[in-house]
Image (cartoon, rainbow, N blue to C red; front, side, top):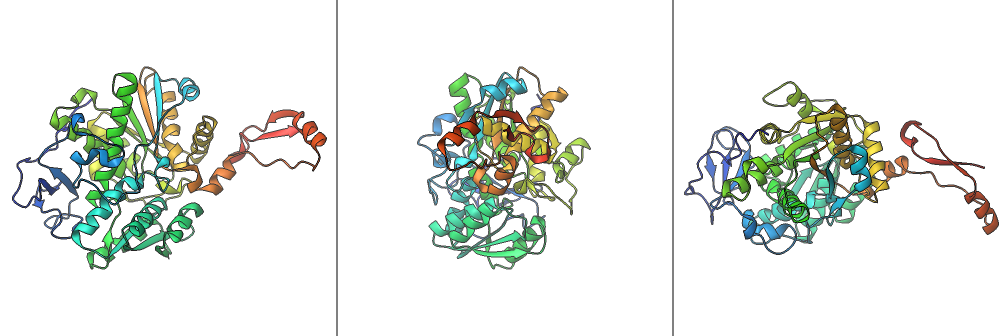
Length: 440
């Protein structure tokens, strides 16, 4: 495995503008900034992405408690606006593990967070920062999960919340969450990237505090996924996983996990050779990160036309690509695109193991299967697949992928006769290829 650039990079001398050992550093030019004196999302000098830095990098011994704030030694505050979040399961899936053909397969199910997705981890930190900088309106662009999380945490903090959604492109379960939590919902005639352009413009005018993953504090909460995976896997297996496979939309999780591992390497808690390979999966209709990896590009090229039923990763301009591409390359990982059909099959595969996820989540398992079949992933690897959102986030997709209801008469004997009918598989019939029918 490649272990290049696993240190945090740049000077770790605490700058004068640090606040209690916390500051912001531009990943492009190295300029540093105070973390809470002003609202900023990118570098004042070169517009590069910012990263949160700390005077002390964490070790495993620094962590205590449960959930996201167990890791407060690696976060900017002792505690945030919490519901609470984190402490999600790392499922065993023996049948799927055997079918795909790896030594150990575990599923990190982030759909078990309070609002049903990993976004809660970023919001518990990000909304706390919003309080620290003194804003009164929060805003995000969203394919759904971000809006649900921000709406809930904004409500908890008694802050006005504004969400911009691409019209007709967000799953009903997610819009319902934002609505019920009291957010003001604006439907934009455009895709997610158009929504993000508008939110960034509003933020630059001081009209709202942006809590998309362009905000570096969002990723601080999300990096706790990496800490949890390492701790739990080591507790169960006595070693760290070889690879983490995850869906990629805006690439925030890829960047966040890479930062978590770099901090542990910096402190000496994690050996460079034990850093898992970060492997990103995108839908074929929205795959700019895969294009960049396959063509060895320094940055992604914006895809203006993106389409996939995996709405949570229907993104053509991943803002965290400058942080995430080095994460994939420097850990020896890769990126792969999968079809919507393979995503649906993986969603069913997980459901058969009792794990209910939305389509974008299942992309990680679809990507693992594709890479295993191609020989990119070895049979002896220990793999963790990250699933990012709950099945009920997109109930329409779940219903379409699942079995059809079977009408029966209002009579017990006739119900029993129906149940004794010969069960047959309908076979690969589009999205309902695995639905079971009955010959009566």
